[in-house]
Image (cartoon, rainbow, N blue to C red):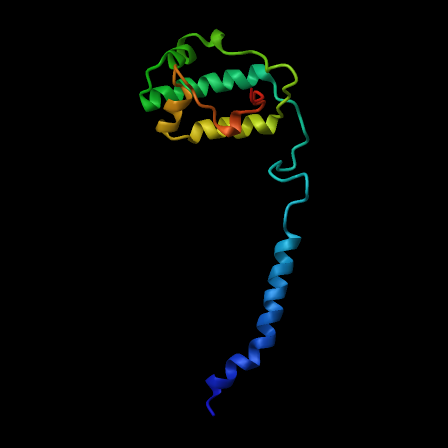
Amino acid sequence: MSVSRHFPACFAGQRSHFSLALLALLFCIAPTPGDVGGCGQKPQELDPGVFFASKEAIDCQRCGECGIESKACRDACQSPETYPTTFPDRCLPLVHDGEVCLRKLQYASCGDYASYMNDVSPSVPTECNFCPEPAP
């Protein structure tokens, strides 16, 4: 009998113990329920003035980077006063929501950004749709 024929049988029990330990480790290092994606931040309401000023700056920058020419882009770059200064009634996004939205805008493709800044039918990334309108 060769040693290689008996080698897998010798370590079969150790492999199952290793697999079990690995599975237990994965469950133990999982995030705490309620803290998924929060990075330990305490819930804090998003300041609409800060958020919309940041969004306007990103919109203007991305329009320039992507060569998007639309009224929405012109407003972002030349008429920031057209941006909202408050969220709709009963809409209370958190700071973390705003951070995720702004990050999405910064890293969106030019094709996606063109759809966000479309004058006729703009789309909204799901990360930025804090308070969706109820379906009619």
